[in-house]
Length: 202
Length: 271
Image (cartoon, rainbow over all chains, first blue to last red):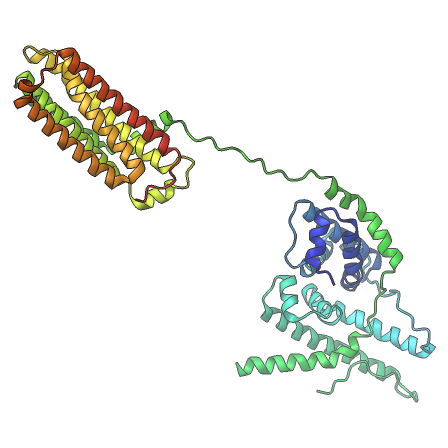
């Protein structure tokens, strides 16, 4: 497979095929990453577009990023941060809990319901994290990044990534455990309760 | 170290526990149609890359400074004590010569001015250290030409001071003829200087200096022999002597010019 760097070099020379190949390669992962951060598919698409535009402008000035993947995630992260700081974000209703979900056609109605419930809990618990913790968790679990790569993307020390991730996971575990306990209490008396999302067993 | 290892283990364990929970948060994956729409939106920006003019690095041809401007710049290279010392030497030479006969004054000048030039060249070379030469070797001006420009300054200084001294002597010394006196010391000085410069550009600084000293000694000896015994063997008329001296001055200038031409091509003086 042709490397990212080579594709960017060809793009800088105006190669249309390289441009399309690079966008196809990173559209989905960057979109999913930003959507998980912003919890808004439409806003995520805007961020993706802005990220690629910044890349093209960079190439226009003949500056090719040395590690394109990290560069893209870093730029996307920064645009998200800017959005979080913006007045637009504060004025909007950010409780985007009714997100589209990938529907498994073979899943039963009960399974789909349970999955949506767990997802709501997940979204709610993610909100309890700081912005940087959300970024680290998203990069680690959804983008399958190594800790070192995350440190490079967010431009923070590896130790900070580890400690942030550790505290974020502890917090998430705590929040989800409480949610599970509440759910269990609500369902008390019923014959069957929904399985707990998180095992508190160590 | 062990504590760090334990912390890492704890983190990895926590990650394993949470993996399943995270899998519930699925987001929509953009379709190929979405990607096409994105490409269409980005296309105008991408087209700008192709349409942007190639970055042309305008190769500005670096014009080397003229020899005259280089001479002006190199004058500042000599420190004030060099100029004061040189002036004092000439004042002393002129005052000493003013109390002598014309023939003695001529001998003093014939001896002192080429020596002053040799000392000046030696001083120039000694103060032109290796570090300076390394820096100068990357300038558009060839290092050999820099050295030559400094030598020309020495030559000009000696000639000017010598002429001023000669004018002073013309008022002080009896039976003094200015033009023959000038030719008497300028001719050997120019020849020696031309030789030093020419040999220096071909064989190196040390060889050039050695050749100059040898030429100076030979000329001095020939002059002394001619003055003591030569008149009896060959008798030159004043015009013949003037012709020979003019030829020597021309030869010296020609050698200096050849040295200048050569210095334009030399990129090192590490010899």
